[in-house]
Image (cartoon, rainbow, N blue to C red; front, side, top):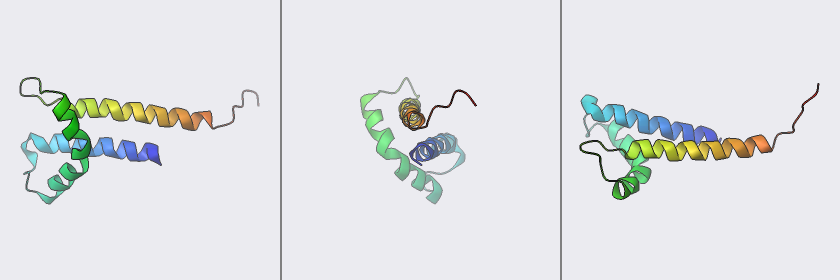
Length: 87
């Protein structure tokens, strides 16, 4: 379940990136929901990582952090499964 939540959060960040390219107004209720859902991770990253020119790389760093957590969750789940090598 946690793995699925992390993947869903990645999806929310990805949709926010796409919408922020001018496709959806920042006043749109869907965009406001995405901002409220993703800002708890992105805002602290923006404070720590300055933009590269006009590019905000905090979503890329967020994807990397979430990917690390997903790997940790998957590894923990796999360690809990019994290993069966021979039929």
